[in-house]
Image 1 (cartoon, rainbow, N blue to C red):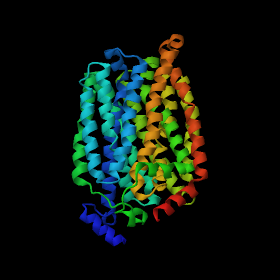
Image 2 (cartoon, helix red, strand yellow):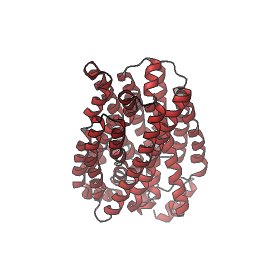
Image 3 (tube, rainbow, N blue to C red):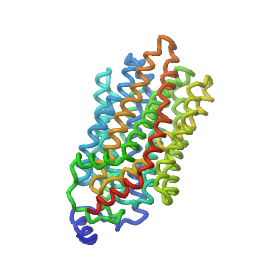
Image 4 (cartoon, rainbow, N blue to C red):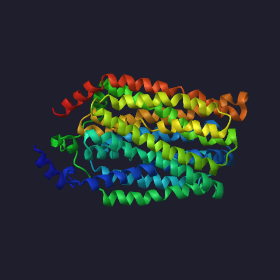
Length: 444
């Protein structure tokens, strides 16, 4: 079947051919998807700035708080991402993103009504279920709108939703909880997602699959089964290292962003509003710069040698580690915040290049599932175990260190940063061959 025939069939099926997208529309679509991802992260991370007041109000342990921040959310978010991504590889991705926004925004509002640990755990599970349907379809749509040489930058812009979401979550959550209580914070951040869902549903178009790669002849082909996607991905050595590098980077990142507010309260007696302002500015602006610049550098140098997509990330991971150690050893709050600039820069820097390479390591109809598989590994290890590990270690250290136990628990888990960098270096070794193998598989 020719590209023209595919385009015709795409229009007939309600799919807007990507070759009809103007640069202005393409940038608009990327912006709306990024805003949706921002809402995703606001609702996900709002809990971090509220951990200490929730602990005091509901009388919870650090282990329970780690469970709420990590495993409770991550298990459902990560595992449901795969079947939802399979659905996205077979049907309209835009509608799935809109539905997901509606679910997780509504469940965030529900979090404000809970009265005990079990109810809050169930509400967070609901948020995780909703958010599972947001990212993989969005990644797939972006890959069909932007060509490979611009894809890491596009993914980097999309991933700015992480930093903007954390900025809004910390700033709004910190001050609202200080002025009106932690329940009001959930109400205020949950509602806007419902409006964004309407923008996604009624202003975005479903792109034709594969046109940006020049191989849209497969657009009408049946989507492979999940085990076929898994088999192809896992046969690629570069993907295995990308996945574990992302998982370890996420382990350190989620551990830090979840527990840093409580660390600053316990070790430096800072107020929620003060903490929210500092972390919003650092993670929002410095972290956003890191997320975008790393992806931009990956695209720029990756044109000459695609392995730079992973080398750039490895360099960022290596530079981050000593500053993370300095932060948790500091006895002055301003020095601790100053050291935090570099870990914040690196916090989500790995995501754009890793997503771009993962999308290139599979065929067209595998993209949403490939993204979900990467996020399954990343989130189960990173989001699920990172915050939980810190909570457990903090409770274990408490008899010896008292309120400073959280400081040393966070310091303990920071060894994952250089470990992650090693995986990105190893992944670069076979990246060229693996990308070529996936492209050949697409043309069969």
